Image (cartoon, helix red, strand yellow):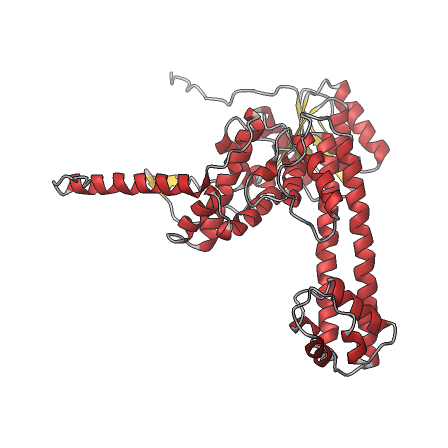
Length: 443
């Protein structure tokens, strides 16, 4: 008689779990087959979501896994999280079905099966109060981007009128530019009169500005100019409203440490006054417990983005390597046959990483340890790789500051040069030993 082969099975990690396939009109939920009718569908109305949560609670479900599908998961996630369920928001790449087996029922059952055996990892999501700040900061970033587009359309209208003001002054959205543009909208056409509106800080003379204001005042271009200025002003009001809402949301967060007065001047912002910028700096400092702007190239806006995206609690990440990997800044680990495989790492869309890369790109002319490190990287690698490596360095500093509560200490360019000299000396010693020679230090 043939001996039966022992079948190795996956370990059951979450016996009381559910898998949800998210949709725009209905959600499909799968639980263990021992329950009656283990697969059910619920519409996306609020009362249906409440019924879904009540059904899971009646079955004593503890863990719920769902795909991050658009923004449709947010209402259900927030409801289940408030009801005490441990909700895993998983990447759709981790739940890909077998080819030819695709339906809502099979998808939710497949998510449940993977989750029950502990084969899915939940995405990082900060605390609910931090998520409120994050939504406001993202909304502000959208308005700033829309305002930049309105400014581009405004510039297009000026170019069609052959008004060369942008070639004379550095910023047409500044004091001088907006004075002249508003005067044009109000009916002023004399270039000499318009040139009198220039600010004393403008380097160009009045004659040059007057020459740049000779153009054709066609009706359609003036109409486009007027509408874009109105759009620009409206978006400026919305940005200020977002700033007020962000300040109120930050004031409701628990304070980790009382922020002292800054010892150095805070970088100015085009949309905030100096007082508002300092107040925002203090609020972010109190919420995070450390001063992120002490790191060179990180301004208040960058610190606000980082605070809203990750929050002060990084206990979800065991080490700094895990944190950098979540940001998408860690080097790829594609190894086969003991060798590193060629190719780029998977693309990760992370707003905190984008802010860190922007800060890293500003380190080229910074007179600090990070700036010297970035310039050294630029000499031996591509610009994009150097920016990513410098952002990785800044991310490790942020992780150490938030987990250990230690302030940033600037080492200076001298420390980098001394470390670089020691590294070069060790390389020369290794090369000399390889050639059978010794180096002798000359006094």
